[in-house]
Structure formats: C-alpha cells, structure tokens
Amino acid sequence: MKEAKAEILKVSLSTKDIEKLTGKKHNHIMRDVRDKLLPKIDESKNGRIFYSIESATYKDAYKRDKPMYILNKHAVNVFMANYSMEHAMVLVERLYELESENAKLEEQLSIMKNIVWKVINNKSFISREYALKSAGINHPRLFMKYLRSNESFYSSVLKREFLKDQYVSPNTKVLMFTQDGFQWLLGNTEKINSWVEDNKKLQRCIL
Image (cartoon, rainbow, N blue to C red):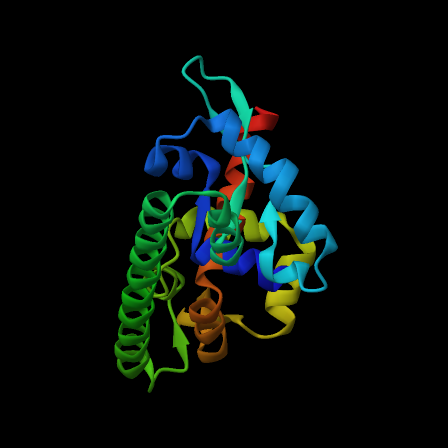
C-alpha cells in the first residue's frame, strides 16, 4: 500500500476537486464513490492500483470537519464512466495538468540535486543548515529538534553515520552531515517534510 499512497500524492483528485470541476453536488459524488466505485475496487484483483484514501476531511463553511475521498488517477479514470463526456474531459484535462506539473517539478529537483552535489562533492562534511536547506527541507531547525527528541530515529541516523561530530576549532565540535547523510536527505525530502508537518500537528494537539 505504500506505493499506492505515494501515487495518490503525485496525481490525485479529491471529491471536492471533482465537485468544483464538474459542478455536481458533493454528497452525490460521495455517494457514487461509496456505492459504485469502492465495491468494484474491493472486488478487483488489482485493487492496489485504484487505491483511494477514505479518511480524508475538509473544512466546510462553518469550519467543521467533513469527510471526502481522494482518488488516484486510475480511480478517477474508472469513476468517470459514470459521467458525461463533457465532465469526463474536464477531469482528464485536470489529471493531465497535474501530471505535467509533477514532471516539471521532478525535472527541476533532479537539476537542483545535480548542481548541489557538484558543489559539495569534494567535501566530506556539510553543515546542518546548508545541507538541509540545499536538500529542500522546509523547516531545518524543526527537523533537527524533532530528530533529537525521537531517540530511535536519532540513534539510527547516527549509527548510519549520516551525522557526525566534527571539530570546527581546536576546542569546538559541531554535528555535521556526511556525504551519505546529504544523499539520504536528497532522496527523502518529501518524506522528511511530511514527517516534520506531522510532528508540528502533534505538538499543537498536545499544547
């Protein structure tokens, strides 16, 4: 299911998106997904391909949490069988736009990674702030704060030597990212940013 969830994050439409694009009432769309699409997915041998998130919510006009579905592109394509040609074309166009946007972002990220890696390639250690910002981590300080507070995660990072103490002066040692650590950041930017956001929400709930 991890692959399916990643697919959803890349190209997906929520039932609220479908409402906006087609003009259909949200409760009718929800009914169609629940009564027509989900039973077919459950019956399918390849249900993983059409995987949809059922626990998503949105805020209504009164700031109340209301349920909605998020469908990946395959589920949207199947769902469109219920709709008119006009509505189907609108949804297909939106999916195409999302795929094009993601392709551009992935290309830009690849270029950025290559440039950054060339700049630091001859360095054995990279400062935490520079490494985190260059890798696209949205909240470097929060990441380090949450990392240190998560004992098992922090120990794993140190054990794999992604972070190591280095002398910046005769009497001062600073924790810095190794080349392997920087590559790890580059390869997990999206996951790390999501992890930080989840921790932010958790902290707000506690407070």
